[in-house]
Image (cartoon, rainbow, N blue to C red):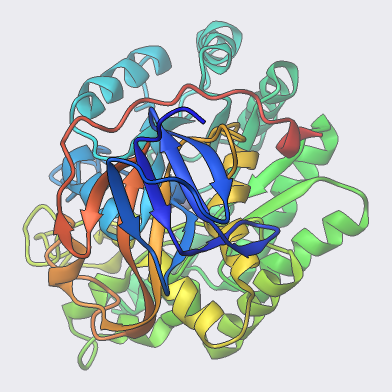
Length: 471
Ligand code: URP
Ligand code: ZN
Ligand code: ZN
């Protein structure tokens, strides 16, 4: 056997299908050996009593994304990917937003400049299409899909992002021609607008009313409409950030008809509820939890768990979309104080995602270790064209590994998250199970809370069309 660079010794190796006690041998950043007992190497990590799992892939994060006039996102690639590594992640898929009037290709180039040399973990980009002009549909999207960006997100709400039904259909048609996966933000624009105007007229402007303005039926209606559009065009779709039972029912209904509809959910729908948006006596602190779709209620949390257990969801992502709370350019700016309408949507969660899923899922006996790995890494790699290079522990894969102490008890705090926001919506949540080491292509970036990574170690990942997602 060629000399190994690194051996991770004595741990329990977990993949989406198996759990086994073995050593992991790494050479030139890749896994080259799995065996009961490997020879010694210049670098060794003792993983006795630990779980050795694929590093998390977070396939839904927003980094360095323009947030509209006066609003600044709290994380660029440096702090966002640092926080990702602390939370046991080794790859992130961020969004490259096309602002209206801009070229999609130039938008992607701008994101590369923001990310290059700034990332601690590997990264790729999904596209966000907000302005599907003939040039975007006819030239830019096809060229970008071939160049390593085979997934794009479309929005059914938000003033500056919403696509009309006709535009959705045009984008879906390009996805079909090019073999791309469309990710859909399914909430209906007009219903939300109507509700927002009415609530404001009634003086109901505090952050809590964000959740009232977009009840589950708004998500259900848009999910159904997106599925119908996808059926008309004949493409699979991914419904992202599903918050509760009603959208899940639409997804299950579609699958019952033989349609390929994938689904993603996120930690906010497991451990937060709409009551969190009430803050302290309906004050602005509720803005810390404003995201879309909003967290629902305890029954919805249980429904989401059933979906995670039964295969309704393929991926569990953070939807990390960070703003600062105590900041004019964040959650409590002058306009945001006048109405929930203007509170920037989105919450930070890139570091908290996996500890929450592990603790609430594995430690509490709701899901197996293998399902945890599938939901946190393997399925993301398969869905978005990174498999088998990423997402598993197997010969030939990148040595992207998170070593977990399954018994470590940790209280989630802002200080632990190492992100750019000045708060975490998960403050005070106690978890059992913690990623004590994170290795990206065999290089240690997080050593038990000590951040030892080199900025710029993270590489751009051009991706393939995913057969798994589209077949
Ligand atoms: O509230 C959210 N989720 N903001 C981020 C943008 C999005 O819709 O994913
Ligand atoms: Zn969204
Ligand atoms: Zn998002």
